Length: 457
Image (tube, rainbow, N blue to C red; front, side):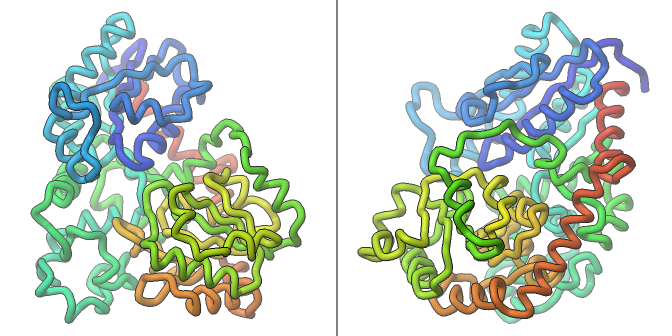
């Protein structure tokens, strides 16, 4: 190991979903917090991904570089299928990443790369870093329990089997042979571990990632110590220097965003803990039948609601729904979610159980009702309802009118809802404490900063 006088840290983003935005949060935090003078930060992603980032006021020492997305020359638009997009991008890597790194060196006046920080999905970054002779630091942006499951892929396949034939009979079996996942069912595992197409491009990517992570100098995770104690205790035996630095929205709060639809002033008119906020994020979307059931449930419940719903989906709502509920409901195309969840009027959050949304729910002290869709959503929903017990999940997965009415009755008005609010408040306190002086996430962040700015192979 040696030191570099002027470190040049290169970030390689996975340009799909919220991954690039989360990695940019890490880059922004590192670039603005105690980095040695002269440190250069280069952020690489596809042009489309970079354009979607909140880069209105980026730190002056971060430069952006677009890398190829793998589309054939002359193609005007990517395929609509996200898996095809991923396959094209990964097929072009690591060559497109290598070219991007070279551009970053030139753009920084010849500053030699001292460290590569990547989304953990981009296991090929290990090769990029190795060829440059520098450290590789992957960042896992999803739930720690999902990472833990991927690290146990081979064991899970040996114990459960692989493929649709092996799963139905064991779908409700608990993973008792992995202590950190003992409350999780087989059916809750992300697709591709034991169910789904385990030979598909994305499944192979995640399996290879799990195999490559031990090559890292450290692995940063978007979580906080204490939310998964058994996993916290075991990860150091599985990975080098696992560093929990989350929730990342507390590490590096984003700049204020305009509240175009006046969500916060609308919430100001409601009593504490009476409003249900509904949002399935930017990627997940409920089937048309479920949207109708969700709307019917909101209407029949009599509960005031704020619903973040894409404009195109409004035509799927029951006829007359918006008019009949306009006195107690607000449906918007986008809402400032962190601020909404932090408002005293919000008493429940109907969510897809995406990890970023659940972290925002926890740190706002809001009870959740989960309708998971894909990826780690099922595991996270299971943790919300059965591990942390800070909310509920729809049995059978899909939203129904009766199921939603029952859930809202429980979480907003029942005694169990009060107990859930107490538990989520306790979990919130642990998360907040992680960023106080001497807190685990704060200390781990400074460890990460030291590793990436002072060491090289």
